[in-house]
Image (cartoon, rainbow, N blue to C red):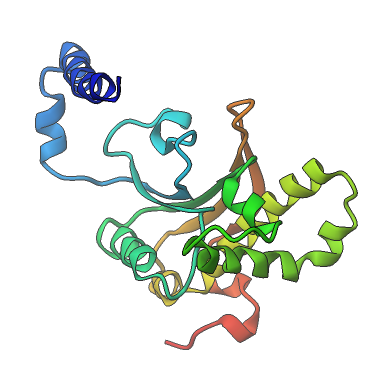
Length: 212
């Protein structure tokens, strides 16, 4: 059964290629010439949240980085490398941090179950809970508390994104760059804009503003 599924993936690829060629015989030739995506998407690795598909974007329109719970961690060289390339080489205009309701990483951070090496990653999410524990602990309904934790985690990741030297240097050089926080509803398919946005160093608390 597993082997059939595996082979079906390859067949699906052939069908997808043909569907694109039917619409535009030059589709893949155009893609091969390079990419100039206007958006960097930092999202969750959850299989139910495909970045391009949920915003109706085509190949070449979104540069994507995904990890457990869409985290922006300053010691994560993978994330920083993607961010640096997107901002300084591709010159993206927007960076979107997109979380989602029902996130397993957030759920794990709300509990104390030992999972494995991911426990070390989850600890960063627990820090977000600590920052907002008064608000979260005051929410009696567990699902509402869970949903709010998802939102607050996105907010913190947007702030952490703005604090990076990569983003601040782009702003210092007057590069047009906007960063945003969204949450996707798996049960509805709709995106909620959290209205947490940055577009300049001046919007950061002074303690975080780097001197270039």
